[in-house]
Length: 336
Image 1 (cartoon, rainbow, N blue to C red):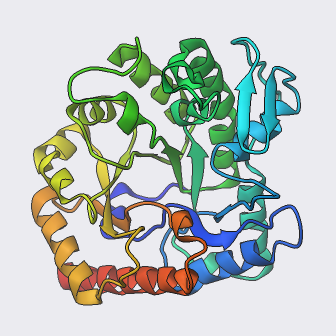
Image 2 (cartoon, helix red, strand yellow):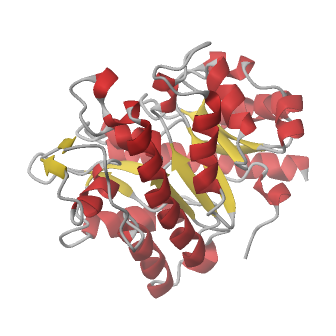
């Protein structure tokens, strides 16, 4: 069932990744623990876990979708974390790709009686520009993201994933596009695309999402990032603000109201090991409400996968999320 847009104000979500080894293809102990922990900290809309691969068993947000895609695409060649494409053509599979972790997430929640503890659930889909950037990474100007045919093909393929995730009942589906902060500069695009092409590709995925759509772009928000995201049909624009306070100057309350969009507001750092206090997070969220009105969702800046390997990083992550949830809940009561 589709949630009401107004119910999203000061709701809490996470971006997806946690600092733990991915064991989805083996016993799934880390995956299952991550699901239980996301529920236990009280997130309103937890994402299915995206865990980090190991040297012997690589996994990342690119491989999650490109590895299954390569099974029916001999031209897509994968060796470790290196991905290459022989030619520009990628054939479209009949079935949605990269959704196995999302399906397990739903099954685990239902089997363990956890679904009713949540307001909703959130899914992550690596966007076509970012996914294409994983192909031929040795040369930025020649990687897959520089080829419109490759990006367009991936967009159509990922649209099937978005449609299937909607059918599975995910309330928020995020198109994760961190590479857009590389492509979209202050006044010009890195490659020979126009803004209409970028908006069109993103909208092709958004129209397959029957519930709420989101686009996650981390890094500095350039004028082009802002104008393109506001021009799309997405419901939620997702950025980092804790580590990049200059991003607070980009959007206005009027921008969001006119475009009828919510802002997923990164209020805790995903790279700093310091655990933000409830009071600090509350101040940040109050400032967001002042700047953007009652159109903000509380979330970390980005995923926490980059902290893997640091002692106690997993527990630190949970403590950060727990404080964020407490701050948002207290503030919701204040505004009620």
